[in-house]
Length: 60
Image (cartoon, rainbow, N blue to C red):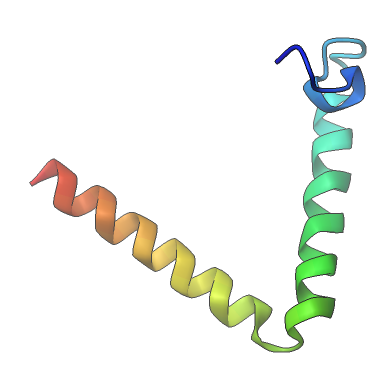
């Protein structure tokens, strides 16, 4: 974690970290939506389904 800026790791302002994280996630999602268009929510759903399926198979 040495190379990451302090605002990203939340070490500088632990109280503000959840807020920063939300802003970062929102920004990332907006960027993905702009790049991929309408398909972003669909791809996100597929990704979540795929990850949960993989986790389920690992447990079995």
